Length: 344
Image (cartoon, rainbow, N blue to C red; front, side, top):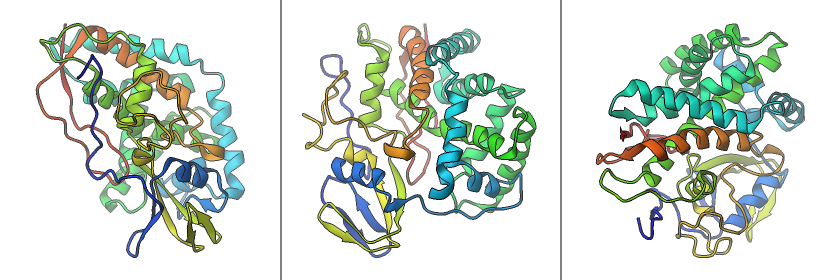
């Protein structure tokens, strides 16, 4: 840390910003801030289609939630998610998360694994409770199983476990039409790894070591915004072109797979002054980590509130341990495996 602000290097594999580039085996990669924003808002770029499956299975869930919905179904399904989130006051979520974090630290003794005991449990329990799931703790456990298999192409054994977890979540979800219940479950799944990754990254970067001076005094929400920019839990998202389209000076044929790199775009010097500098409250073109346009994350304020509730308590009570940080292997997510801190 320099002048009390962390120095956050790009994660391994983060590409430099430049024009859209093409590799025959991978398709197009988009790294510049303006190009990523343009692709996120251009209807020529759509979410890749997913196959459905029998009702109550993981494949059915993926095909029914707004996240993977085709354009013709997306608006109505997104409206279900927005309607569920609208009554939830982010400040209430923050307070609930802080309360559960305080309770977890009281049980932990002098050390706690932030990922296992807090980042992967507290946000899901709070959100599941507020959304009306019958057993928030059990719902959180099942959501983690679904999240591990959520993106297509995973091991069949993980898919079988996720099928059983989806059945558990449907039994715990509040009564309603199957599509509504699926999108409530999808909301929890979307929050699972992304919020845990943000909390883990923020704790690693912002908590001082055991012998360090007093921590920085900036507001947690401002600190989280810079962690989201420099070490985003969602590093990229996928699209496919449904028409021939021009982007960043390149012609992309219809049917092209496209990877939008949030991690690179958030360090674009054309969008952010001194992009490598950690600067809470910075002005600028805005993060792309939560997406933008009609498929932007509808729960960004709620996710930040949950993370803020946990981090507020950690900043007051905890210090970072000496162990190196490792991350769960994943092509687009960046989530720490473990993160031990000392408790005062």
